[in-house]
Length: 236
Image 1 (spheres, rainbow, N blue to C red):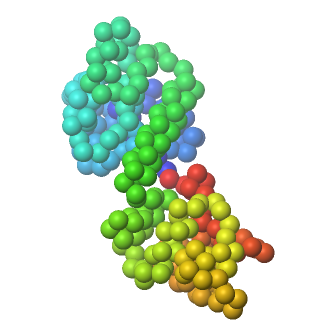
Image 2 (image 1 turned 135 degrees about the horizontal axis):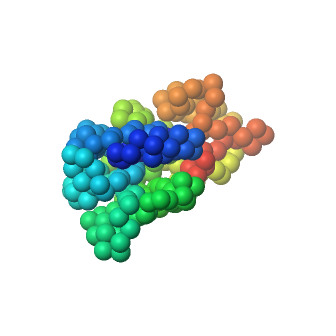
Image 3 (image 1 turned 60 degrees about the vertical axis):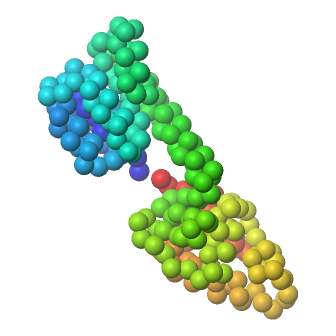
């Protein structure tokens, strides 16, 4: 679930955004003071920041500048009563991804948030693909380091379990028979060895699935075999 911070000193606007963004399925925090908001950003990483410019404590432009010096990238949408072109250009030059003048349409802001988060996700996936790292939900597979993590916790796999998981992850959404998996991962596809696939998948599930009774990553395709979750359908 994406986590959004709103730094806005107008309680009516803050409450309105809070209600609408929660209805969209986002987690939302609100700060009504610039310094308080900046401290929250320093304490934890958010996926997106909705930022007013005229704030008590510290103005939004300075917050924007400091956020862009932080190691974690956070998408920023500025909402401001300052609609002059110079203000818009300044906000974008300081690192804001988008700028919306007050008064604004809440559906338009929600649509821009969705679009911006999609762009950020696409960029992150492109970087992961380039580096070889595969991420599905909270599962991360690093083929170069030969490491698997579930959230922040390392997962200990045997060499063959790792090869099987990596093969699945590189082919999301595609169903494979047990014989095909034997051929692709073990290098042979002789009848009678299908139990080898079953036992490895059972062990993998015990290590990477949150609920082995209802596996979300390695799924059974009845009458065929197994498939790995389509990455586009996994929760963030």
